[in-house]
Amino acid sequence: MTHTNFTIFHPAVFVLLGIPGWEAYHIWLSIPLCLMYITAIVGNSILIVVIITERNLHEPMYFFLSMLAITDILLSTTTVPKALAIFWLHAHDIAFDACVTQVFFVHVMFVGESAILLAMAFDRFVAICVPLHYTAVLTWRVVGRIGLAIVTRSFCIIFPVIFLLKRLPFCRTNIVPHSYCEHIGVARLACADITINIWYGFSVPIVMVIVDMILIAVSYSLILRAVFRLPSQDARHKALSTCGSHLCVILMFYVPSFFTLLTHCFGHNIPRHVHILLANLYVVVPPMLNPIVYGVKTKQIREGVAHRFFDIRTWCCASPLG
Image (cartoon, rainbow, N blue to C red; front, side, top):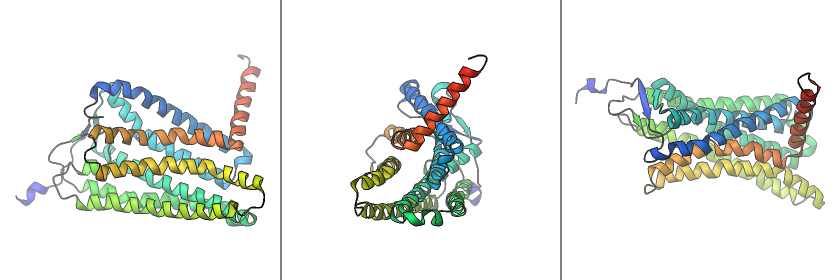
């Protein structure tokens, strides 16, 4: 084979198939997917507005929570609208650059959300284990630097993926058996060695997420030790309740993500449409549930939502059209 056969060629478009084998069910699958997406967008938007407008929520914990809500909106918006366009309009084509952009944002949001959960665990650790030093440790300057570090780390880890994909020649097929573009799925269409893509695509982000998980586990082990040393049962209950919503969100993020990863690595007998269905649920179910969990389990947010709703009702009743 001559050297010219390896000239880098990028197709003008990729063709996303949606969920192969389940084409007849695309319309039916789109209905719950759309409802979950709308719930995720509305819920997280309300959460952000409440945190911004309620002064008693201007604390580091809620700043990180607003970052989590923004990340959830971006994650679901990066993938779900295109999937719905495939299901409803048969709009299977996606430009090569748009596909690479989708790959970048999906992976950035995944790594970023893991880092945000770590920052929230650190916030709870300081609040419960060293409460007298909370305001001295988590100043707004420190919180801002943590937020900047989260964004910078996520960007730097995933940015090389763009070049790893753009260096590949695609001379076989442009058909992607998925409802959105993801790194390894697109790389496998190339007619060149993708070993570096596989190693970097799996090892670097996963190692960083595992490090985050270990640090979160250490934080919560120290938190639990401190909680059970509290003399008052009411104090223990209050401390545990403040961490309950965060633990639920951590489980909703890590359990599905690692289940999806394990099925990709070892579940070779699992049908492809099951992999793709799980991938679609992963980008919409946690973003949908996160604001619900925090709204139900966090008193300050419940009161903030009720306050905003009361203000809206008052304004509507007072307006000439009310």
